Image 1 (cartoon, rainbow, N blue to C red):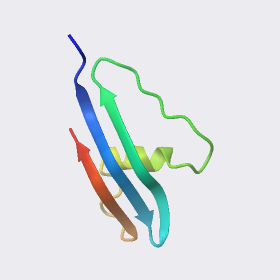
Image 2: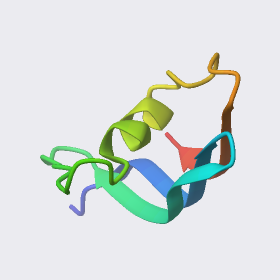
Image 3: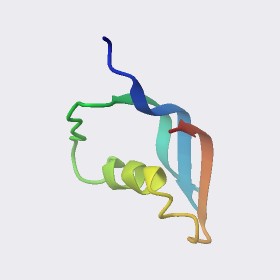
Length: 70
């Protein structure tokens, strides 16, 4: 049986004010698997996790575009 996607991220863009932090992110995170986000400092790893957990909802300067499906 093929694993199903837990998160499906499609065309996600996010901004803090005028600064774009994430640009056209596409990603499927599968169930029963380990997923790692790796990259240099400032590349948007924490911002993507904050989008998945809706932690930026109350940040006044934050803007989100795209779709995240659970």
